[in-house]
Amino acid sequence: MTQNQDSQQLVWSTGLTQRSNSPVSKLVKEWQLISARRKEVDVVNSWQLPGSKVTNLDQVLVRAGFNTARDDSKGDNYLWQLVKRASEDELAARIVLQRILPPLVAIARRRGQIIDGGIDAALGEVLPTAWTVIRQYPWHRRPNKVASNLVLDSEYFAFVQANRAKKVKMFAVEPSLLGELVAEPETSEFAPQVSLESLINIAISRGIASRHVAVLRAVANGDTAAVIAKHYGIAERTARAWRAMAISELRERTQCVA
Image 1: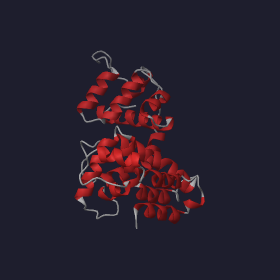
Image 2: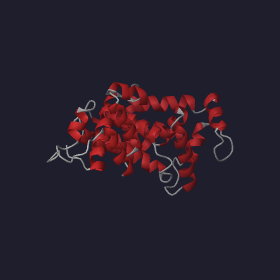
Image 3: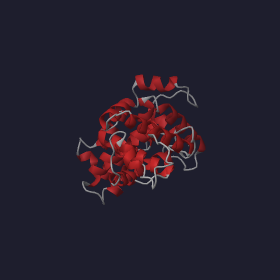
Image 4: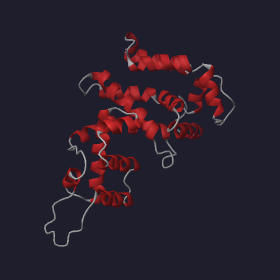
């Protein structure tokens, strides 16, 4: 069975081919269009990935571990090279998304049984999140088990962290941000002056995520969620979630009490 056939079977199994507006159906049709198109194939061949030149992007998926053994180290390394390029190349990111599409749909089916809106709502959460995870993947720190990492991260940020973020109070800009992040000292006689930048520097020394640093500095500069969303090419709701997660991690890394 080819990858196109397997993807189509995936859509059938979820009943999504009945609706042409299904995001999975659209992705499968898009893949069928681009997988053999000369333009995309030539671009991929220009990347000089391991192996001979490809004639179809389905070959790229197989080399990246699609439908191969779980311990396929060559496929894992090939996928890692695609993800490394995906941070700056949309075609690479699109290939990676197709590579992990079956487990993403499986997640949506499972999560759709327990959230409002069913599988449609779950797909609406996990697919955009997966795209962001792919584009932001820390390839320099996580070179192994790439497919598993991408899928697990996508589920976590779409459904676990997103729910936690709803419980985190949103802050606009400094100084109200600092006012919420920093506890009132019992005595101000010897209390040092605290700035958001100093808190960030402390958090950096304690391993805060680099993306959270960028988001916090954007917040400190007065950037709204809309501005952050436009900068990263994400939904405004996602930007608000990123902001909440950044604030939460800053608290944890600096041991501040809200």
